[in-house]
Image (cartoon, rainbow, N blue to C red):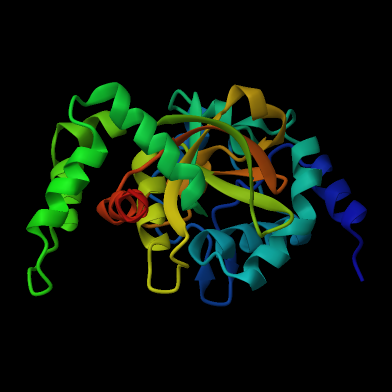
Length: 278
């Protein structure tokens, strides 16, 4: 059995990391969709070199996780991440997010949180930005409600918020300043693009999500967590068809500065929670 320290010794001896364009694992081509990697390597001053055998295996594990983030691929990747952090200063163009061509200040993750943590933040935001109190609006909506009316008045109200000026203001987010935790004990994936994380938050709001939960995007200060952030998103984008600007945080708990409600379903869930209590 090859030990992790031996893999890293091979990696550490190379002049470049993961720059072999010919890597294949059966029919799995690591750079299958990439047209940009050669130009990136040139821009970074990297010539490309043949990977070691174990470097190839690790690169394929990364790429398989990027394509399908299931528990098997997470498990195959997790044991290497702390060691890759130790190599970040030697291979910054590949491993350091701040070597991206994009200016990274905040990173984002779509996830679920308890509604009772999110609803009060929405209620406070409404009080600070809107003249008409929510209780008064809810009272008016109850008068409009009939069992056979579709969509519900509350749903129509959520649509007005999402598609109107309030929705634009929601893009600024709410101050949160609490720790958030992932079920994956080893690492968390983030995007440097709020819209990408918003798509994941939308997917969270499915029929299996408990009624006391809601899909949100958490915003994290990137510089405050730089020591545990891994991978240049420009590099990881070469492994997928659609850019997700993904990076990884080594650890399963992180301080979230903000929360964003980025989709209709989340706004409706929060409104329904407040409506039922009013």
